[in-house]
Structures are given as C-alpha cells and as structure tokens.
Image: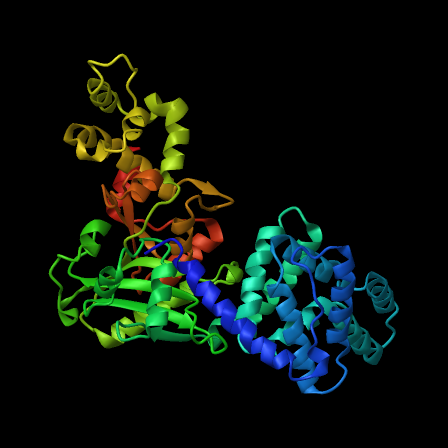
Length: 473
C-alpha cells in the first residue's frame, strides 16, 4: 500500500467534515465565520478570540450554539500548521483557569466554619477548576464527527506541546476529557471480516503499525477463515477502529512471522487449532495516546475466542522486540568481551581470520545479509538469544521492563514464554531486533497473579526455557 494511503483517507474525511459543518454554520447567522489567513497573524487572532468568546457566551438556542461551534471548527481546519499552533495557544492562554478566582476559592476553604459552607465552597472550587477552554471544546461533541475532530485536534496538540507549559496544560485537560468519553465500558468489540466495507478495509491497511499489509491479497489472507481481526469502536466514531488486533489460529506456538504471514502456507480449520497467536496490535488514533484500552482488547478477544472455539488451549503473542538492537549496540560497544564466553568470542573472531578488522558481534550485525550466512548465524545465536532474554526479563527503568512491548504484555499478566531465533528477517525486524521475536503467553489461571507481581515489584514471569537463558548469562 502506498505511503500516501493514510493521507488519502484523512483528506476524504476532512472534505466530508467541512461540508457537514459548513451546512450547520450557515443554518444560523450566529455561525458566520470570519475570514482568517492560514498562518493566523496577530490581527486575525483578535477576530478568532471574539469568536471563541461568543461560543462560550451561548447566546440563542441550541441551533445557534451548534452553528457557532461548527464555524469555529471550520476556522481551525482552514489553518496551516503555524496557524493551528497559534489557535491552540490562544485557547490555552486566554481560556485557562482564572487564577484570581482560584486563589479566592482556596482562601474561602480555609475559612469554612460549617458543613453547608464547606459543601458550597467545594462546589465552587470544582466549577473554577473546570477551565473555560474545556467547556468550549466540549461543544464540538454535538457536531457530526465532532468527537473525531477533537481526537485529531489532540494529535496536532501533541506535536506542539513539548516545551510549552500552557499547551501541556491544555493537553492534560483534553486527555482527561477524551479518557472519560473513551472509557472501555463505552466501546464495542467487533470482528472485522473480508465482507466489511471497502472504506473500513482500507483503514486497516493504512493503520497497520507492526507488519505492513502489502496488498489487498495480503489483507484478504489476514482475514481468511483461520484468521481473526477484532477492533474496538466508539459509538460516536462508528466508522473508525480505535485499536485492532490480528490473530492467527494455528497448531503449536508460532516462531516466525514470515511463516505465519506466508500466503502459500495451507490454511487450518479453525475448529482444529489449539493455539491463538496475537501477532499485531495497532492503535489507530494518535490523539488517543495515553488513553489505554489495549489490555482490555486482548482480554475481551480471549473471552470471545474461548466461547467460539473451545479447542483453543494456548493464547500467546508473536511479538517484535523494538528496542533490542539499540540495547545490543549499547552493551556490546564496551563490554562484548565480558558478555560472551571465550568459546563464543573465538567463534566470532574465526569469521574474521582473513580480515584486518578486530572481529566483533557488532561488525557482523552491520552486514544487512548476515542472517543468510550459516556460519555467522551459528556464531551469533547463543550470545544473542541469551542477551535478548536478559534484555526482556532483567533490564528495567523505574521497575518496569525497558522494552515497551514487553512492558505492555507483562503489565497485562503475560509471561515471557520463548525467544525465537530469526523470527523476523524483514529489514525492519533486523534493524530493530536483530531478527529475534518473542512469544508472550497468556495463561488464563496466572494472568492476575502475574499482573499483580509485575505491578507491585517489577517481578517478571518467565518460562523454564527463558530462565535457563538467564542462568547461563
């Protein structure tokens, strides 16, 4: 699929959104939109500020309120990158919590002399702590695609906020608002099949973040009878998958993503499979970063599969290790002689006997085709498998696994089941994880215990095979 695919989808959505909002804003004089230049110069900021204030004043009825919100949204969509940042800065600064009112309310709390006075002061404080900008943003909820607009607006905001305290504060407000709207209790789990609309299938191709979908035939294979794809949807964004997971129904635990995705591999009958392999989880909405529902998705899918296919006994992932290669480069740069046994060092150096170079693991990994050389793979397999197990199970920051994918699955109650040699020999797999992959296993009777141990003390659940690697380290 062309890299321009996401852009095409977003462009069509934007055109539809502008058309719908233009009709709403033109339905009342209150929705007349000022003419703003794309970069929003200072004089245009004055016009925009007046329009924002009109939205908050709420004069007229519901039709007028929706028209004003639609006009304001059109203003934002008409701006370029510079203009959008200025729009958000204006919103963040001019419509923040009123500090004078806040300090006065805090002083009043110190002077509480009875219960009735205390309740009144608490209510007043809650009102003051809800900034006008949040009330303004909430107005978009009543518009067609208004929730999607706010999600995309936050995606813009995340790019502007670093180093800007006021924009970071605005992001805190918006993230909290979206977290309440996207509580997992409001989400619907749906299976996506090849019979889904072309628009939805196109979004799967565009949003796939782990293993790129190469073509429509590739997508059809991933939705074949021995495959499953499930997604969470929100009722206010019914055409947008928020997060989706791809599952392969197989016999035994998969070790290679290339084998798993090979369209020439004979399909299995779903009812004969004993293992469900979760091989890709993709978040589709950048604006929902920090709103976590990935863990709920896995558990809901496991429940669905257990009901549908009672022969399934094993639930595991085939996961990438995105930080492994960076970790290897760091530790091997200065400590390779300490991390490899003498026989492993000799095996590596033997590959450089006719070469003037010193001979190191890093030099071998620098060759893009190293995995095709049987002598090289024999020399590297032992040390890299051992270092990978150490990285996943023992390397931590603030008591959590250093690898972000490992942290996700361990915090959900999985255990590290198996490290797979040359599990992903794609350019991306070699670049990020030296070709290795890992199975995280979800044992239904151990999930809660594993989750509690990891959350409380960073204790990592591992299989006997992984523990043997760690003992040999």
